[in-house]
Image 1 (cartoon, rainbow, N blue to C red):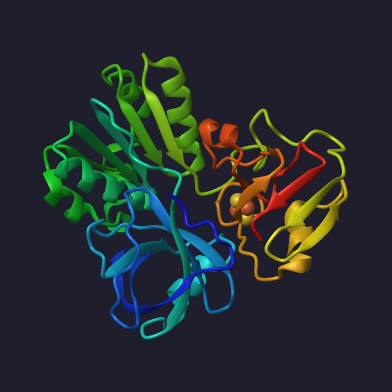
Image 2: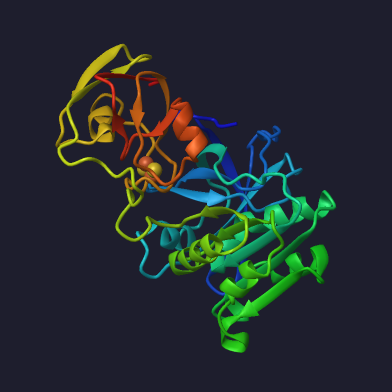
Length: 327
Ligand code: FES
């Protein structure tokens, strides 16, 4: 499912930058030689290496059957870490940007009904999902909230998919999305897909915990409250010393308790990809060849954690004395 080689990637040409809504631009990326791009499924994202070297993750939001181009959309975040401002303020058309992926930790699973809940720029992966659900003849509803209609991207595209199932809810006209009521009214077995700001994700998570059996699938823009290791698997205090073997580099390195695995790996492999360093973006995902990874991220599913063949090395450590990575 995933392209996990952190050192690999391809250079794609920025063919078009388009204003989609107030503060939101879309980028269309194509192979410079016109080659087909790797296939992807709704929920997938790519790592985009910006001209400054900053790496950011963006959900693919074009039609999944378009093998010629990838489309991503970027909201200008006034108080962000600088990646979105760089996208908005740099003349990118005609430039080659390194791209890694696509990878997918937010895939559509089979379900009798889908409730899609999107907040703001969180609509990007949901747009691809809605297209897929409509093409499959699935039962679904989308509720899309945003501060104001002018800042909500892709409203026309979404309504064109199926105006009867798409509910656009600008906060200044209709108030906040009533997520608790929407989840509470969902039929049993509904797959709830939510992507939006942390407050919305929290509200949906709490509503799903109270509701009759529904499954919840979320994608976050940031670390949950309390930090990137906010689940019960947060690092144990004084988490111990272990050894990491970088199989392809032929190196064996010590990881002391006070250093992260990513820090140590970067000394030997400075090009290793990473971004958030808090375990939520998936950029540093690395294949585990041997040993028992100790997960502290919010990206992997329980099943993926159980399998133990991949990990986020920015927050993950090792439960075994030796951990062997595909680096
Ligand atoms: S750098 Fe974001 S999950 Fe590791």
